[in-house]
Image (cartoon, rainbow, N blue to C red; front, side, top):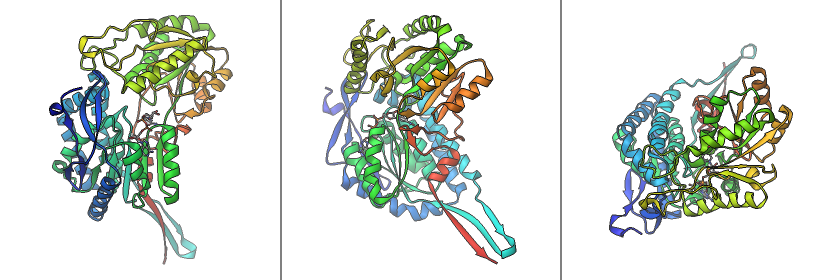
Length: 487
Ligand code: NAD
């Protein structure tokens, strides 16, 4: 453990000021296993102060014009972009992700989230209908909901938090946000930029701490009418229960068990590297990562051979090394959980083709206690196996064969989740047909992780409730009213 003198100590950000907390939680550097940061262990008291600040700030912030808010969001985007490298270094250290991923995905996307909602807030219209013969005119009006409770996970810390903060404040709400207790640093850094961007005190309040204390205090607070949550399905069930007595508006972005369907006529030169990436990017810790690959029998052997060869090329090591493809997993407990899935599959008779338990991992001296594992490919596994049914959220993917299109769709749909799917085929009719029938909020064909933020994002079944995106976020973060005028 590092000496307490060198620890980074975070503070809550309430009413425009950093405020210390009476107790703290240790936060680990996943690539070394050292405690390097202390995060406030906030509870009801801190959340109460944050809600009060958000309440005080609401009348002024909500009465600003969309254009004024848009200018402030753009300024904030510029400020993050100016510090992109510092944010990327911090995100990589805090989460274990590679510096390359933080530099090219996480932080640029956080910047873009603010730019995108700064622009999209200027383009919404409301509806109007006439009952001319009877002398009535109806129109709709949208107003901010109030105080938004925003709760985000550890895998894409700043990226996912800003995906909530940006639309919430663009729509005129004020915010009480809580990032994951395991990855709070970049959210704390973001708070340092608010004043310079022109975000007045109390508009965004950041309360750090655990889900069971700080998170539940937000969810249960009667003055927070709306919760936008990204995280696991299990936590979402608890949030739903806890918020039910208050009839809160909920947006829930949850886990996945995402299939890739690879047909005989797929272009394997494109499909294989893309599917390796979709399985292992960010250590497999993306809700959209592929974890079940269904390959048509005619190309199964060739696919498997080439897929394993490509996976073995992935370099695992220090996240700060720009040549590394995969960094460390988030925590010791998570690493153990992911490893146990591989062990269970092995015990059930599945074959591990590469990675965990099969190949050895060479780590530099400073990373020996880090939470690393190799990208792992499993085959000869049954659809009922927990590795094929449960979200592992790590660098483990299963490859199995199928015969017919009908069979592939049925098996792909045979899990409780429905977040993202990929279809690989050069037959356009098939691509449309299969995409229509997959129970999945997102279907990528012959590509992966291509997002237009204008369009809805979210999952079906246990993968979520509601959608977020330009129009969807606008609808979620505002209340609609229908007004009728008799003339
Ligand atoms: P988690 O559910 O454990 O935690 C998410 C957040 O909720 C954290 O901030 C946590 O402190 C908080 N929390 C925990 N218990 C709470 C409670 N009782 N009340 C209020 N807040 C509580 O999830 P995680 O382990 O941080 O993240 C991984 C999960 O997130 C995976 O299931 C992944 O698929 C999912 N995820 C989904 C998306 C998506 O957009 N669909 C994106 C990223 C991650």
